[in-house]
Length: 263
Picture (cartoon, rainbow, N blue to C red):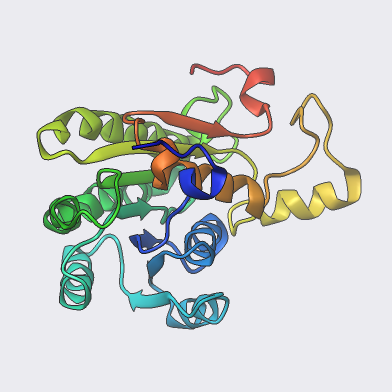
């Protein structure tokens, strides 16, 4: 049997069932839109119903579905998993993107959302991910992906110590999951974005629209956009990235290369 190396086959996600936390806004929404526009069925999860409803209206094929809930609430995550189980019986990929930036006095809540919430999301969907492998609707194995941040590696705490520390924590958790979940054929990977449009970066992006980006700040001299994050998630979610496990995909326009960083 011949092996196709055509881009349309390598990056195909048609029929894939996905769950994206934080999928109503920012990078989470861009990820949901990228998957859905290319044939996936996507469930987005978030606290604000109005934002979820707005996100659903952006779907290209009518396959973005909203589930309201909070990643810090295990019962909400279990309810979401049961809803998808009733509709499909399995899932192929879980993307945890929900995150917050708070001050030093809010370490506990920042970690609850950015690290614990991501871990609990994976735990809630393990059985459905296992069923995804058994379903065999796609060639690649089931996968969990976390949207971390270059803040996990940058030694300058640009968004604060609690945010950077929580992203370093969740990055390591997903590296550990990549090893722990091997017996179950479930992969774990990390996307570490730099500056992308989101509620956390809006002030900086508005300033840079006036001043522009310098190479000393971001060598690419721009923020990331929908195509950049779509390329990252479509690679990991498709046959193209099926041999990848425990990987950190940095998409930052070269920012870590010009800052003191450990990566």
